[in-house]
Length: 150
Image 1 (tube, rainbow, N blue to C red):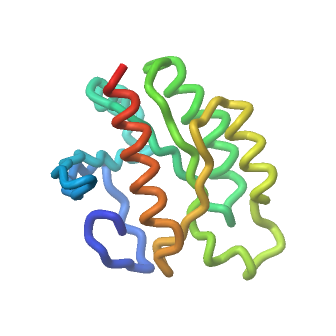
Image 2 (cartoon, rainbow, N blue to C red):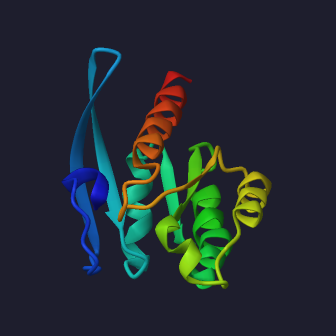
Image 3 (tube, one colour):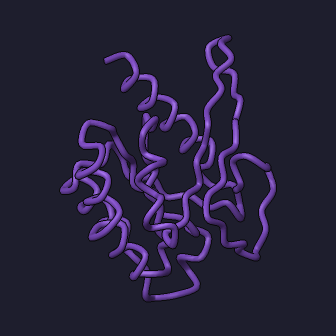
């Protein structure tokens, strides 16, 4: 995971789940987040991991319309059903590959879906070239802190 390891690898290594603490300093405060990376294959146990969630980050690959459809038809409805009060953001990954294909999810379509489904924000990013990674972290912190203040 790019955020935690500060490295990017081309090869995807499938996991069931991975929990990593991630420490960041913000406004002179040390904040430690636990980032849970949960596999879609872990269907029967995935909902167990939802118990302590303060924010969901729902990702899809911009060059894979099936992953975009899964985000809107499976993952977000599952989140809304199991944790209706927990905020979520929709993240389009692999933005660096947009110019390599004509068959990508358009930013306009993704923003429309994010608004329609109630996501707090839609963010495009790329782990390969570090595009918007800091913005993603900052936004996640903002929405997590705002959720915990309520």
